[in-house]
Image (cartoon, rainbow, N blue to C red):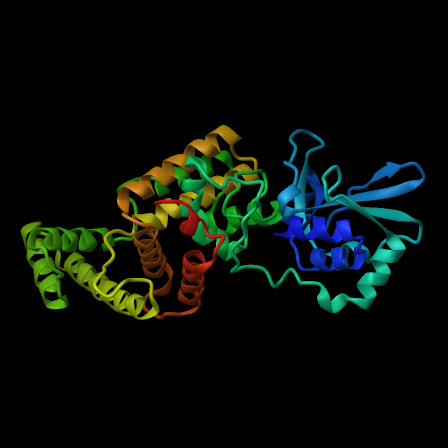
Length: 377
């Protein structure tokens, strides 16, 4: 973990090694919330660095994920944005200032501006760019590792991996404040507490989901339980046509269900080939797509200051309980989550969203630090 690597580098007195760890890590700086909101709205393009005075020196604090403080509220609220060592070390005035990493922690370390700038010039190639962000499993040792909250947060792990956000924290930063607010606005149509509440209610609604998919999957699951054997494609289509006739559904609805059934079967065939499904397994529900996302939307709501911590905790636990009731294992949940995402976005193309989803699945199944490896379903 990043903080452990920093601790050992500091203990060795290896400042170069310390900076090398920072160069590849998520680094956060405090920013004024009012300025960040203006960036989100397009009324400004950047924000001022938040500094403090220590005697004759100007000091800037930065943090790694494991020691990231909570955002503050009120007129002078501070939130946090992601940055790099390179960005921090460049563009400062000529006067002397200091960078303090993780102040007040066992890994606190200070760098003079001149030595930081010199290191950045000589090691720019070591700095991981912000654009290279995503598709990584991140676990924070100071977060939830066991217990009910960790179990619930683990259902949000696929989306956390996609955003390279820690799966196991429920704090006032998800990715970074500006990114969190922008994601809610652009991807979810959420800019207010009321809009966020409406989205959460929709995601946690048992009747929500991908149109047609639940009907097809419920019908097939019922047949499997009734007959005690797998249902082939022809049998499923015939049963679906008969069910639509019995329900007196219009022709257009029947055709929609048949198209969805064909898509589901195509995805399941690919899932088996790629290890998302065992050879004789099938997807029983896509509700996990909504419930799993609800975990992350609750986290975004807390990060965007659209709800308080107690509300976010309650909603995460509820989403986790709904997931747990729908599925029998992490693998069962993962297949349902990915199928829901594919039916929503991919439409049988097996494009980038499928590739990302498969990578997240493999990380969560294979990585030693994955919650799906150390938390019992």
